[in-house]
Image (cartoon, rainbow over all chains, first blue to last red; front, side, top):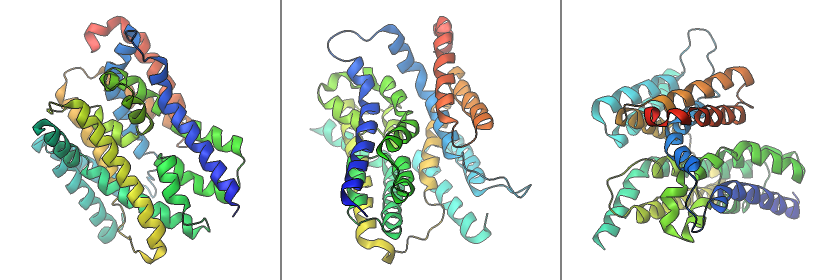
Length: 109
Length: 228
């Protein structure tokens, strides 16, 4: 594999990713006050983003054959219920992850 | 000094799920790259320089098929455009950090965003932001080095352990829901993304979903005092 190609490719990916991450801060920084619209978006966006990220994690889930429920769905429901009950993040995440591993290893789902 | 210590301890504690996910996924990425004939140095370097997991996983296939630089740039933009949202939502919170905010901006991944975007009880918020960001970065780089060095000799065959990151997002979304009596934003986020996933399919839904969310929330600003 050509080293120059790989290094340039990495540089392109790093540059585009870095620009995406920096642009909002470059546009709305400095001593000027942040515009009200951006302040509003900053406050209203986080719940929408987290919902979007959850769907993003589940995008590849396969529901075939019919009536097959993927382990990630079962583990996800357990995480939500356990979290409503105990409100302990590490407990919810730990139990959900271990349950998902067990479902995959021993139940093949 | 005491607040510094508690900020670090809280950052360490809250980032345990990210540590699990990043070390496992970082290591697997290293194994995947070497198994596809890519050099061992590529994964650690990619984790250091690019630091965007889903794009890095995708890049293995693109590199093997020798995709041209324009194609790489466009794909990177499409996969990572969601990070624009994170910046917009953190501008005000990162403002007191001065020049350091640019460093934190460069290292703002999905997982780091999910940890810094929620309210914490810590007194020194800025120290907490810095520790969370640097710890997450360290986990990802450590995973890449581990994967590259150990290669396929390492048996990481624990299927489904990467669910830790999904569970982290699920917990944070649940926590946000329970902490507020206003659910407009969460419902719009969920409904828009699901609708776009059904219409555009798993490969192309994220950008339309972002546009839909931004448009609807912008339109809804007139009801700001009711929905926020």
